[in-house]
Length: 111
Image (cartoon, rainbow, N blue to C red):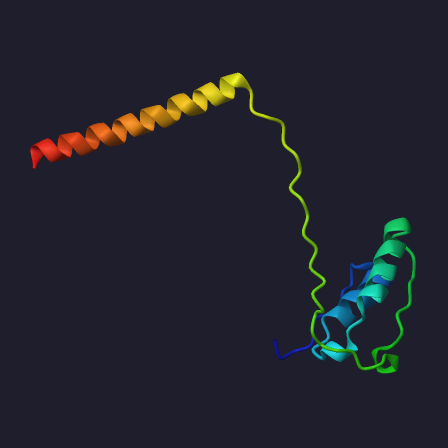
């Protein structure tokens, strides 16, 4: 936590500098979301692209909080379970309830 991170040797010419800047201890020196998006989009198109970020010293001082850039994703739709799967699940549930009830009754009679 107190040492600087190791250089990102395998990240490539575009992602390496971006990752190093994202790991900067000073939040004001980290790239803004637009710069990150630009680099990631260019790398998605051409992984060998050499996108140059402006040096951290040239950036204006930014607000260090995240700004609430959280994105909620809807869960992927899953197919409905088959009749056999539902029947097996219901049978298993009934069996578990029966075993728990029988055990409780046996313990109550033995006590």
